[in-house]
Length: 193
Length: 126
Length: 282
Image 1 (cartoon, rainbow over the protein chains, first blue to last red):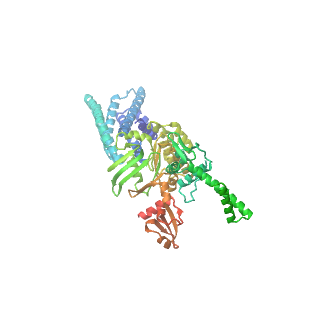
Image 2 (cartoon, rainbow over the protein chains, first blue to last red):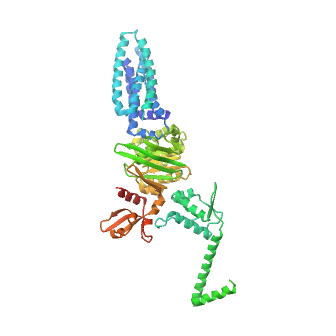
Image 3 (spheres, rainbow over the protein chains, first blue to last red):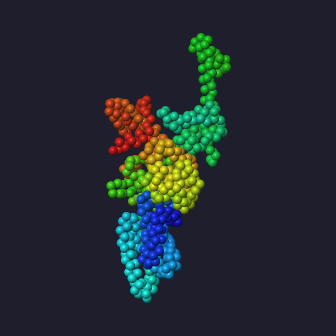
């Protein structure tokens, strides 16, 4: 499975270079929206990798190599998690550095919330994409991405208006992420062809 | 050991190998106890099918021209009586050809040559 | 042991079906799979490696049932080169090597690099910039670099220049110097298969018409050229296919054992045999 994650990194690396630039610029502006946007965007990187895979019919070849279904499916999740974590840490660092001048610290809570949202969106979309392929799954993850963006907006508003509410809400997210993942991975393995 | 496969000839490849090896064994070019290349090595070197070399070797083995030692390979067999007989017959033929040529040179007729042979054979009490 | 065993495989698709396919490739031999496009060669290969499940029938590769969980370990022993499926296009040869090193237990980096040099493959160029020939060479390099016992090659020589094809065929020939190494190679370049194979299997519209020893095939048939009348004088069973040359001449594939021994026949190549049979089957 490690080899598959490594492969996907090689595949998306070129994309990453442009993305890193965007990342740096957006991170400068310490906004909850930016953080969430970046992290959730990263959770979509497995789909870029899968699109390249489909282009070269890699899956046909991989089916004849000693990978298990579990390897292939898990590698997509792991790729998403690593990308999100990396971009999250990067955001944090840039915000902390920028914060030295502006006086605003980085928002760790926002980061954690966005990580959870990213994980949840992966949990919802990966089973579908693994089953139907990137093209058709694309519809589904557009919907989900939209849904996540809306909930980001809602969350941001809620956080601003009701300082006391966030805590139970904040607890809900990690639980949701964990539960979602626990359900999603076996489902993906079952569905994958 | 020399083997040349000719595609132009309508003779099956295994037969060509069989015939060439047999001739060399009879002629003594390949000596008894000499190791022959393995079926697989021969096939790969000649760029032909393993099945074909196996067939040629199997036939040679069945006729007693070679034998296999498990784990070691194939070796030229000791000449058996048939082989020796064949060799002797060939030698005889050669001698006779020489005699016939000589007879022609002397102007001997076929009758005269046969008479000479009959006398010689009677003398030897054969 | 058989390297490959397909037993009564059935697989139905809309518009096409593999019907009652049974094929055995003995260990240590090279089997060539021939057939027109759409005859089912690539499908057979996918069924073989469990990339596709058959509707019925069994598949065994290197003695292991393809449907069993143990089959994953068998894939370590199989080197695969496919026709239209490759590595993601942004990867370079070096990167492919690294991924494969993490994929196969017995990966030999030295062997891989040796092949890259031998084939003249660039190390840092992305795969999408490779010519078709180069893509093939890379796939072959990978397939040979993890100590496989079986090679499955789908059109592995098409797209290669003749000299390179010759070199690659030589590599495949050398591969089977070991007694437990086998190859299944599908190709439409029949002259290549004639050089390399021990067996020829002919697939036509999802059915296996025959799987015979190549040398026996070549011994069994001959090419008759003459007039149409002369051809008529031969027995019906003898003629496997014919083509008219237009000026009263005819060329036909005949079985040697069904015609008089004295009849002059040209040597038939595998290509001749297959082409005449395809025409006859239509």
